[in-house]
Length: 369
Image (cartoon, rainbow, N blue to C red):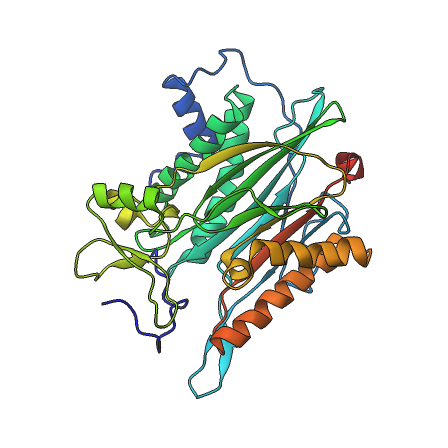
């Protein structure tokens, strides 16, 4: 049976070696006939990753961009304590990171950054999201350096990471992670473009101060028609959202709904339900970007559970445009607003919350440290 309201639907969002490295997997995949160039890959500039710190803390590695240009924090969730009215912090299963330089060959005429949010779930969700944060960027850089298109490289990086996780010592049968990844490129100092890849319900939103917010991704819910069709065709079962207490649609192995109750249709990990249509394969979209004054948000569903994309955009625009504050102040307010919504709606339970805010400008990469 589906979980009861009393046990807290967010607390039970279950998703429930071979030592080949990411680089080796990329090389093996290319060797199988991906259409990559046969010449040796170009030498890449060393990539630098800064992980989203706990809200209020400083990053352990200096971020690639000034904090008024790119702001990011992660906020651990809370869960009920032993006594009525008590709550305590839980392990933060989210991960966020900014990587730049990223996949930039020496002497190339473009600059790139990789922005990522991962939302782990299940008993080992923190380990699944940590693993994914490291492996996706390794694989993606390898595929791009060997000549794959951006779309194909992103797809193979997600699927390859899932393959590596299955071979790792981490038990990801009932644990996994969402992924929302944006590869951002500026060519010749003028052309701005982005490739957005995602699996699950972490989201990417473009905030235009003069127009409506634009969802650059859409959540992979189990009851989305295309997702549900794939799951049912593979022999899985989808339960509808729980109307009484607002629980999400879920994926099950059996008609009796005993395992695992996964609240998304795509993820990395969650290998128990891969046989019933849950896939790590991302959707990938390309965008030409107008860098004159807009903003981009990447966030886990700790933000999106109770805040619509337009409301999030309004918060960012208010702080960055009207109050002339930086990206860090704006993303802090967004996370604080999301936390307050959780407190209002769910009391002593709150999901982990992670967000990245990017302030766009024509000279974005000139500001890179």
